[in-house]
Each structure stands twice: as C-alpha cells, then as structure tokens.
Amino acid sequence: MSVTSFLDIRAFYRIKHSGTKKEQRHLKEHALRGNDIVDSMVRLCATCAPTGMNLYLHGIGGDECPITANDALAKEVGDDRVDMVLANPPFGKKSSITVINEKSGKKEQEKLVYEREDFWATTSNKQLNFVQHIANMLKIDGKAAVVVPDNVLFEGGAGEAVRKNLLERTDLHTLLRLPTGIFYAQGVKANVIFFDAKPASKTAWTKKLWIYDFRTNVHMTLKTKRLVKGDFDEFIECYKADDRSKRRESKKIERWKSFTYDELIARDKTNLDIFWLKDDSLEDTENLPAPGVLAQEIVEQLEAALEEFRSVEAVLGGNGACDG
Image 1 (tube, rainbow, N blue to C red):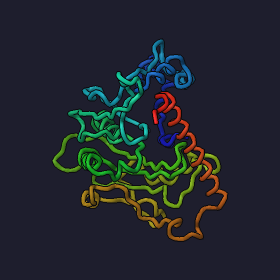
Image 2: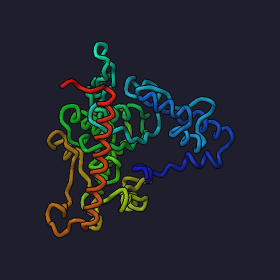
Image 3: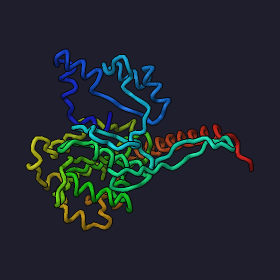
C-alpha cells in the first residue's frame, strides 16, 4: 500500500470512467507527465516494463512515453505550476551523480548542490531540495502532501531555513508521523507534511500546525502486521478535509495535537520533530511487543541490511578490485 493512498483522489477515476471523450483523451495523453534522473528507468518506461507496464495497465500515455530523462531539481519551475502535488521523493540524505574518472576509468560519486534563485536554501540534501521544489511548483492555494524523513524536521542550517520558510510562506497545516516498519528499507522514520501555497505576505501564513502521532507505540511490519487503509480512519476524521476550521483537540484522541506558529518558531532551530506521548517501549519493558513480533522485525532488518551489502558489493564489483 502506498503511504499516500489514503488521500482521496477521485477526479482521475471519475474522468477515466465517466468523463467525455475529450476529457478521457486529455487524461490519457497529456494530463500526467513525469521524469526520472536514471536513464535505465526511463528506458524501462519506454518499453512498458516494469514501470511503463504500470502506466499502460492504467491507460496512461499515447504514442510517446510520458516519462522523460531529466533531473527534476535542475531547473527552476517558471510559470509551469500545478494545483496539487502528492510526492514520495527518493530517500537518502545527499544528492550525487555517478561519473567516470578519465584517468582511472573507475566510477565515482560527485555531490550535487543545486543553486536556484527560487530556493530558500542551498544544500545537497535531496529531501530539502524536493520540499523547496514542490513548494515552488504550486499555484496559489495549491496543495501538497509530501513524504519526508525525520531529518527534514530537525536538521540545522539549510533545514532550519526551509522549515522557517514553509511556516512563513505556506500554510503548513498538518504533519502525520508515520509508524516504522512500513518501508522495505528497515529503520526508515518518515512523515507526511501537508501544506498549501500562499501569496506573499508580511505575516506568517501558518497559524497552527496540527500533528497526528501515528508512530509512538505503533508496531508495523511488512509481513505480519501490514499497514492498511483502515489504519488511517482516525487521522482522516481528525483532518477535516472539508473544513479544517472544525479541527479540535480531544482527550479521547491523544495522538492529535496542535502547535501555534509562535510555539514552533520559538523552538531551537525551528525543530518540528515533536513528540508528546509516552513511549511504552522506553518506559516499561513489560509493554514490549510480543517476542514473535520482535523476532520478525529483526529478521526483516537483517534481510534489508543484507540487500544493502549486496548493492555495495555490486558497486564495488563494477569499479574493479582495489589495490591493497
């Protein structure tokens, strides 16, 4: 299940199944576009497998593949803005590209730092860059829901600058803290930030940030306790998509809490890595998950680590053996 699949995107299916022929043609051939920085993935899309097959099965794309080989972060957005962005940007703290050393012929990694006038901060942190890019992609009152790792919430320097600008220049109204164990890469701690684009203003647009802590004392695994759509029912009820002014804190829902702009901006480095619930696994060893659950989590983490080592081995193998 996609982390953002709880978001109700009805328009696509309404047009696909009941729209006019003109609307359906536009949806199939023009409405959806994408790019990938990896040429091999674009080629796979062009040949309809595996990503292209996914597009094909959903009736997306005409004679030309809608996926092109581009670095989404390389150019400023310009006037090509959108109404909504749902994104799960690639994780990994630093942006880099693989180049061939002319002298040794070996593959090397070069750090990518994007210097864009429309960015609030210059950094090689790809998540911070994607957040800035997405914020600039939106039309006024456009909406975004973006999956980000924890470091986006607390990292200093460029991270602090990005968070301050989000609070001031957009309405950063919701933060959903996701449970661990829902990604194939074990140990990933992620969140979804929700914000709306706003016009320039002398005062901060964010008045309150509402946080739903779906992580503390929640134990998920990909095999024995998978994340399902129903797990988001309480959050969706709290979210009040039709009218956010109706949001309220409740003693019955301890996971839902709001923080004012003044409270957030006063925190050290504008740190948004906020928890308030008691973590039973830290406070009381009697409330640890069942041994079987712990064992399964350990197995999955070891398997994920093994895959990482295999990836490293493949890269080293491609570079050739090192002289000792």
